Amino acid sequence: MSKWTAADLPSQTGRTIIVTGANSGIGLSAATELARAGAQVILAVRNAAKGEAAAAQIGSGAQVRELDLASLASVRAFADSVTGPVDVLINNAGVMAVPESRTADGFEMQFGTNHLGHFALTGLLLDRITDRVVTVSSGAHRIGKIRLDDLNWNAGTYKRWPAYGQSKLANLLFTFELQRRLAASGSSVTAMAAHPGYASTNLQSHTASFQDKLMAIGNRLMAQSAEMGALPTLFAATQDIPGGSYVGPDGIGEQRGHPHLVGASSAARDEAVAATLFQRSEALTGVTFPPAPAAVT
Image 1: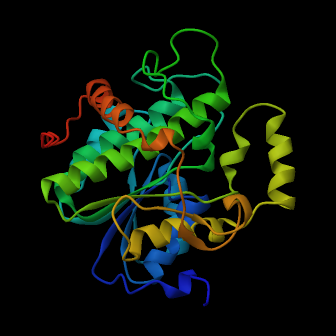
Image 2 (image 1 turned 180 degrees about the vertical axis):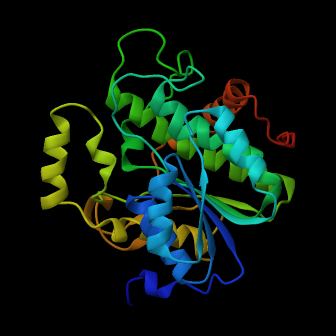
């Protein structure tokens, strides 16, 4: 059986797709292929100039709008600018292992950008999404632990990699909880997650430490291309798979390869933690989703 590639994308003509962080890396690769397949792609980017350069590379199927996921005001302004239906929202943008810093709203940067920014964006756009939400996580979710007593690292010593792992675990907990809520409400909208494996992008160049040099070597020697890393996202965004699916590469350790359904850690499947995280994310962002249906007893 042949492996799935971007050449297998079904026609996306007539569809509108938002991709956050689409000016480089797997976001740019995904946006390029979706536009090639006929979609109108909204490049939701922090740097408008870089976004315009990416749109020029993609062609007429792309448009640029500013979005800084580290600012809830920017998230709200972006959501307000989206007036028509959106078939697919791809929550792709992210930061990894950055030095300790804070978002405009005082959140720890990785949790605030990777999780809370996308949580708020999804909630604000949910009434316009017609097909699915795809959120990009990482194999690093397996090193994550949700610090329910201190989500934003306000106490103790900040640790960049555990903070990154928490944000990527939060992406999966959010996806699975959102899917449960959508299914219970009878919505036809679904929530999916994907991860790119080890893909060579500029994500690995912002630790502001010696690790940047080490990861640059790894990118050259071991990583797959951004185009390959985008395949799980494209698969999750376009294929007929169940809500709550998690897509990643099919190679050893899910580091490289073609997209297929993969498993998540037991922590990512903890429904009690997911529900609590969802509620606290609503409180932190001020963005509320439709109430979860009461459990049948």
